[in-house]
Length: 77
Image (tube, rainbow, N blue to C red):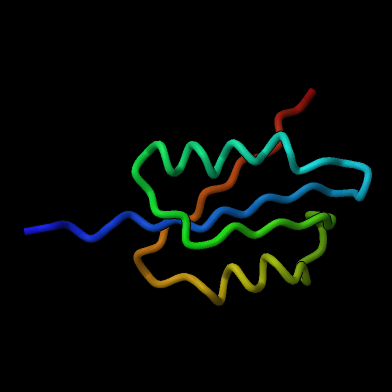
């Protein structure tokens, strides 16, 4: 019997247009290396204080109940 594939959706966000999402792009590669099928990657440049982030809203309405959500909290420098 074959098990269901692990499915992930990746949300990448920075707060300002001056910041770059490139540092977070490794999350997708890490998910694939861990055996996940990445069903979607959502990229956004928006303040985390705002609840009306379009890509975040899309992410929350897209996944099936068995999808995993992968995100990385920014490290404090």
